[in-house]
Length: 317
Length: 266
Ligand SMILES: Cc1cc2nc3c(=O)[nH]c(=O)nc-3n(C[C@H](O)[C@H](O)[C@H](O)COP(=O)(O)OP(=O)(O)OC[C@H]3O[C@@H](n4cnc5c(N)ncnc54)[C@H](O)[C@@H]3O)c2cc1C
Ligand SMILES: Nc1ncnc2c1ncn2[C@@H]1O[C@H](COP(=O)(O)O)[C@@H](O)[C@H]1O
Image 1 (tube, each protein chain N blue to C red):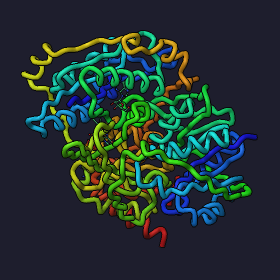
Image 2: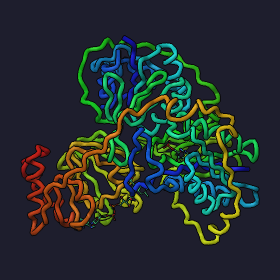
Image 3: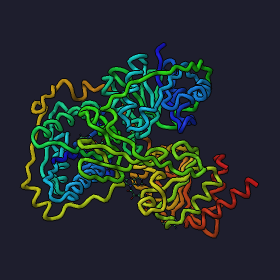
Image 4: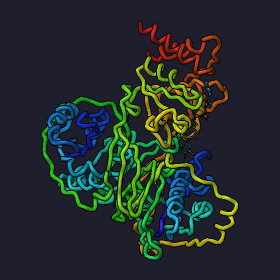
């Protein structure tokens, strides 16, 4: 069986959940090999993690010459690894950066590419959700090595023992790939809440919060949820852009999505319509969001949410 | 200096978007327009010009798309672009990202030969495909630095700096012109065409190019040679509206918590 390259999603060596989902999907297509862009001294620790989800090999690519520049060096490195390993497919977690890496890699390898898959079958057929979640599309790469970016929550991670053999892979990065330099990086402060795109429950607030996100955050914390926002709330400066759900923000697909003071514009739906269960609190009974919900409360979020939070906290004891 | 701004003609997101029988996007039966996210690209191109008083700077709007796609270029001209190019050819229909980026790259090279292309500006994503990949692919093909997903753009001389929101951080990216730039909807409200702008646009140059004008072989593009194929498209069954309760004296919170508990979320 051929190798399937899986690019590891991590923050400073801390492996993130989508990596395990991708390894699980990779097993359907061949023999999963994980690719770690990072500091070589973290390679062994990362290998320990990913081998539990079936990674046979772990290619460690020293990112000293890569991390200072945008996208192009990663595409060059993956091209070199792909040329050496002739993989059956290359899977990347679907982030903005990885989609760009995939696009450049597709041209370099002369291969077809599919972005934002929410499922991949053993035959390599992908499922995507398009037009604000109103359609699903089945597609397949027909030329070259399939390059597929996969969204978080696309598979339930399945444990499987892999060899986890660490192999350092040396790459050569051209000067041309170093044209866009990362001059400064400001890490975003952690909120202590789950990551928006990975969370099982997302509680969002919109213009209806009037700028007071406390009821939304309190309710989210009682459920152990991530907090999201509509663009109206972001544009008003109430929440940072990183929390925006929708077409130009994050796409989420949690078990439960709770929209508070959000009308349900098509661009917002684009980011949450595939959630399993949808709940809304809105004081306007005509708000379009109610067309989507499994359960809705017509009411003022400033009274409904604090009361609900209190009841949930009581129940939990 | 010449700036090329890439604008896409897309089906209106608020209309009933659908697919054709061959699984390509219906670009004719549904009303189309200049992708809203590309208005931000036009805006940044115009601001780039306006901030550099005394420099001779022109802005060329470029689109690849069917007959009607010329409307996207017209809108850009009305907003203030100086000239337009519409690449249209039956063979292009159904192209994937690979082919689209090829045609765009060839068109940019032709514009460059005539007027220069010191800066190529794109939107963050097309509102129909939402790939956010074409700018990176264009940079790859043109061999230019990619400075993408900018929420803030600043420049001085041939130096450009942008702010970019990444997964866990905000980054400042620096590069030297010529570059491919893409901008997000955070980069600043796009202007509306003024009456004067609409009148002036009628007299601006708008060229129509075919694949042969670009030296691209028809066999390199289009649906039949795409490197990935759509096998099926299905309309998602509409969500059936669930139970809606009206809050009266705290009844809403009780009902909400009962619902969440019944679904085992608590
Ligand atoms: C190109 C483009 C991209 C976009 N991308 C996004 C995107 O990524 N994400 C996104 O969200 N939007 C996006 N938008 C914007 C989108 O069209 C809407 O404008 C936006 O989603 C509206 O946000 P909202 O629902 O919070 O505000 P509104 O539409 O103003 O709705 C506020 C709601 O709050 C309710 N309300 C008010 N007070 C209360 C109260 N006290 N209690 C309960 N309910 C209350 C009101 O009844 C109303 O329904 C985009 C638009 C464009 C053109
Ligand atoms: N057919 C096209 N014509 C002109 N520009 C395009 C076309 N397709 C994509 N682009 C540009 O590339 C950006 C990203 O598109 P996409 O990768 O499809 O999401 C858009 O915002 C446009 O600036």
